[in-house]
Amino acid sequence: MSIQALKQKRHEIVTALRAMTAKADSENRDFTSEEEKIFEEREAEVSQLDKKIDRELRIFELEGRGDSRAAVYEPADDTRAVAKEQSRNEQRAWGTFSEFLQAVVDASTPGKRFDPRLRENRASGLNESVSSEGGFVVQSDFANDLLTRVYNTGALASRVRRIPISANSNGLKINVIDETSRANGSRFGGVRAYWMAEAEAYTASKPKMRQMDLKLQKLGAVCYLTDELMADATALQAVVEEAFVQEMAFAVDDAILRGDGAGKPLGILNAPGLVSVAKESGQAAATVVKDNIVKMRARLFAANRANSVWFINQAVEPQLNLLTLGDLGVYFPAGSLANAPEDRLFGRPVVPIEHCSALGTVGDIVLADLNEYLMIDKGSVQMQSSIHVRFLYDEQVLKFTYRVDGQPIWNSALTPYKGSDTLSPYVTLATRA
Image (cartoon, rainbow, N blue to C red; front, side, top):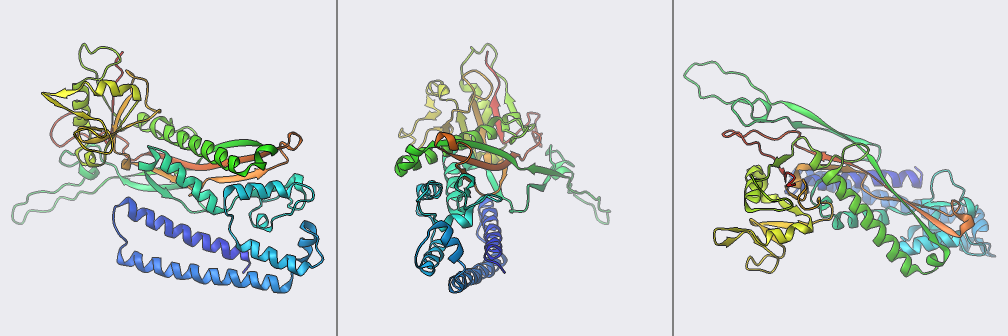
């Protein structure tokens, strides 16, 4: 089996283990005994694959297969020494993202040494020996780091239920209970229990299912870097990582909140399960009053309260500071008497985000449990580099691609067992014009 095939098999196993871990985390539990057994077995497989990969690399060195390529990239008197160095380099990971980018620049500069680690990560179909046609894909370690920073940065994305999908898949179909009412005969879409008399026949019932169908959408970005900027590795890493990670986090969060589902995830503000609380009679425009907050909380499904968060436009905050319930405040900024590390409203965190609407319009304040939002992705931000697109301008081109989709799990608000006001994990306040 080739080194590439061994690496591909290893990647597939690690991806499956990551998905199994994510599933357990999303369900707030440890591995079952069966899952623990599977994890240990697959971990052992990865260890065996690592040994095989190492063995193949050693054979590659002994056979001296690197000689001809060494002559192309770095002429030397001792080609065997060059091949040995290349073999060592191929096993060494990139120290930093800047180191990878600098190696790409060196590969396209006459007289500079070609770093053989680029060979394992080149874009498909490009010629590695011709600098103006070179294109290289950053190794998975850096790609995973970018994704981690996207989710740590995103106030919304960090809270959703996320499922990484396999390398050979472009979507996910998952069955969920189709429940719209808690009335007798409607729970779980049709399950019913009866009090029975002696010898009375059972009445059959069954749950109703529906299928969520998520298909990967593409979020992309392109960056042009001058040769001068590339020469300063510290500045390069700061600019590329900070700017593009922040931008991708912003776009993902915006889609989770207000995406229309057309070529992007469906946001909770456009979800069929959203509950919108009407303004109070005679309420002034661009205000938030106590009754708005009380009624929003009352429309949040009780089971979702423990994990709910208030998302607000920052302009809403002065309105919250004026709220009282009798002689008591209901909004407590961080460090106040509530002694909480974050702002709290009725005991739940308050998170100001740019994506919430302007004060007075629907979406300026949202109460939601984002564990009821499902997101899928390929598990990493893909980054590709090329010099030939802007070759005449002495610029390097970086392309970022993130394949992702998501939608609210609830497809309708829920009618309670007793009462008529529908409930939901996603609640907002109607426009106050």
